Length: 479
Image (cartoon, rainbow, N blue to C red; front, side):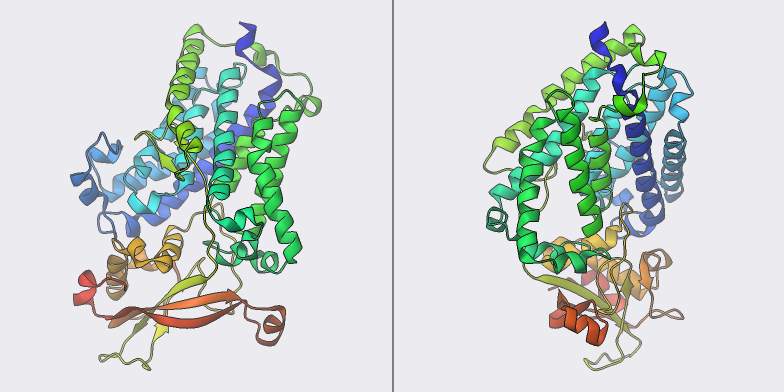
């Protein structure tokens, strides 16, 4: 069965698997370090409460069977250790079945986390990691050749990521069609990076070139992934270049790095890697061939939903059509904000809160706060609270379920919640009252930066949450 393997892609597979394991490692470490405050037994949106109302068939997870913070931590750190082992090449040192079991364990552990993660895990890159991780189970190891069918499925996934994002832009905000969206995007994106200020101040004609290049990369280049080599490799290279540009200009967790990883799987490294190892021509045992064919048929069958979504005028972004996240639809920034709003959270030790009282602001790790602080680079690490705070500023409806519990934990001085923050202005005792204010943020100009040293300028818009005491926190909602 010479058709089953693609020996020349042995190096592409190796790089893809190592990089994917690296992304898994970051995801599991993030889950282990942040879960207690977010979804732990005493978190803002506790897993035990969630699984009482959501049946297993809608959210299959190991934690549907039993949950404890210790068990969750064990699963997350086990996933991190397993991912680190695969990133180091352990999958190539064991029999094929054992390697597949290792990749399947990673997928199952992360699926279990995502399916109980609720709004904290509602991002498109969660499903993207699960879908790529599922396909990795059937990609084989150094004892077999890379299966052609799985390589094509990886290209099909990359196509949907890019083409879906391109379509949602063209159908969404008119500024994408007018090539003006990047006049605003670098300033209003969810989490700016250390170079975002400089990207924002690029000349407007260059922003228009960026926009046009984005359309070419997302609507034309993905089609070329299915053409013969070396055109497919050039197309993959264009995707990599675009994603690296996004890495430099913002913080999008592991979305860009995972997209780069997918693109690598389409590159023919023959000219660089030399002849493939002898094992790269082996198709593996019959059961492996049959399993790969069955999985390919399953993925193609499940792809009908993403395809129908892409051709629909009512295309939606980042939607899973099955509880296992096997085949999903993707897309981002169908609309671009023109104005950046940010919620600043403050506390005071005053027994009677006054508007001009001694209010001290909590510092977040990634979201804008102190105008003098240059945005930091965190991606591929995902600061989940900071991202949700961006949505909270867009509309209080996005924060209705968790903002009250967040404030309650600040008033209680909850250690796990405070660990998610950069700065706690009440190190000795928690505040008596907490409030939230809504500000409009914009990047400073070159002149303002020279004169003040501030990267941001902010203007108070209104009160977001009135001063709240611990007894009232559960009843409070942002306005």
